[in-house]
Image (tube, rainbow, N blue to C red; front, side, top):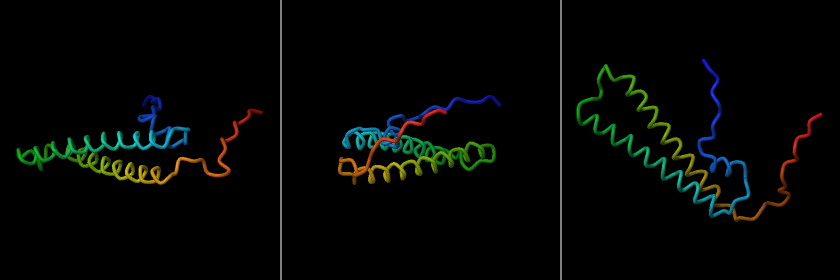
Length: 111
């Protein structure tokens, strides 16, 4: 199997994680946008699941693998949604000022 490059899916969330100096309002806006995206994706998957159930497509032995992937996707989206809400709640509790003693990490030096 070939090695795959690592790609940051959501660089703005990564900026929050790394504590980049962005205004608190922007950090909250970023998390709100991503939370909206995840909620929309979840709703889309759930609508598809309900439509499949209504059409009698599930449960069906020939669709057990696709059903398993669908279940996984739903669980992952609920997980993402919960974590994003927690991130937003945590970030919103910040007052926007830097904590005492907060200073940039020193750059590593090569020997």
